[in-house]
Image 1 (cartoon, rainbow, N blue to C red):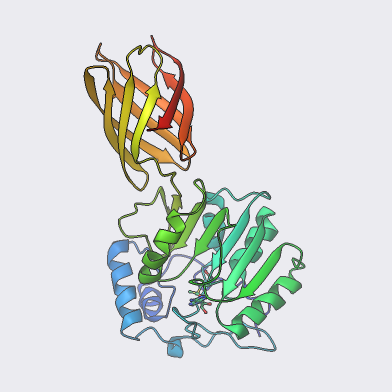
Image 2 (image 1 turned 90 degrees about the vertical axis):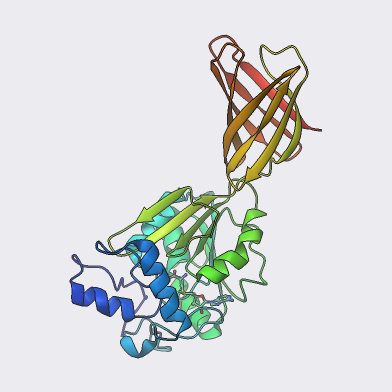
Length: 317
Ligand SMILES: C[S@@+](CC[C@H](N)C(=O)[O-])C[C@H]1O[C@@H](n2cnc3c(N)ncnc32)[C@H](O)[C@@H]1O
């Protein structure tokens, strides 16, 4: 019997080729980082295995449940089978998201609760796990009780495509590429600065801010960017003329045109949550750097430049 369900199936020394092959044949999670094959290829292979139904519990009989319920790799969920994120990767994901006791971590498709439990136990956060399967959710609740974390971890039986997780400051996931893309619009509407970590699967053309690699697995980290696309009136230090900024945005990348009186210059920038950074060329050929906090209607911050340092304000036109 495995009690507590925190065993990492991929823990141990460097993987031998035979072990690697065996792992490829397992259901989710697949090893997503192997020395000889690019992670992208492995993800495609893994997804194909899932779609074709090749990844099935026949390959593993390890019990991750308890005396009341046997949980094995490949146990049916609604949109994705159950399989555990290795403990080493759980730790890296929560470290990368810089989880603190001030956070509320939501694990979408929580399985037997290992991520919410780790978020509360090792990082002091409050955590919520949403799990569709009632029997897996019941096991997760028993695991939470066994860990003595009832006050900090809640397990909700429900569908991640229906349940409200907008209170999260950190979202964790180990789902599928299709589900990630389905969830992407919802995730992008979350409060700017919300951190998202997905084991194994990326978010399509929303490039990750950080890629996390452990010996056998890969995960991706994003910070939800503020929405800054559109037209802004600006006040910049050292510029007397009326100033207008037109921004376009692709996730956390921004670019645009700054019009200062008769002068038009290109702007390149980046969002890190609600923090907008952009650079522009001044008439003398030097670069000014603006860093500001955006809240939808306005942004406020500082410009750095040897001759024109000072505060910057932007308002939507
Ligand atoms: C691959 S497991 C990941 C478990 C855990 N988050 C981890 O990383 O170890 C995915 C889990 O999502 C659950 N699941 C599948 N579709 C779901 C849905 N639509 N809503 C909620 N949970 C779902 C499955 O039952 C399974 O427990």
